[in-house]
Length: 173
Image (cartoon, rainbow, N blue to C red):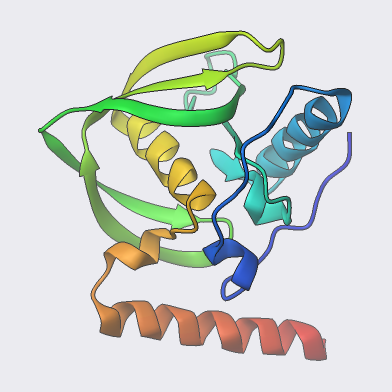
């Protein structure tokens, strides 16, 4: 396993639609392991392949926050929302590609998602609460959409300018 570099907004790869994973190979399994390690190290609760510069429809997540419970690392290949509730939920979202920036985003409170697992089997699960927010946020990444795209233009531009400044300062360091 190896930690991967997380792309920081603005980066054109974060705005591109990721390609479907044709088959589950050892390369895909290694990517998933690396992404889980990268996500836990960050620390974060979700990470999509485009965030590490791989333009494939793969995401990892683990929304278990309770230290007394075992972690629940999930790998979703070619995930797709098959149902979403009319009821909405609002969460303050952040993103590993937009560090230290948070904003309230409204999304369906519950979603059902189908995906392929690391064995190549089809899976489906209904998510709610933080899990629902996280899986939708990560699927957005696969579609070239960031959480700041839900914000008003002024707030989005302000966050983007902060990220440009942060990237410039990092490059100088």
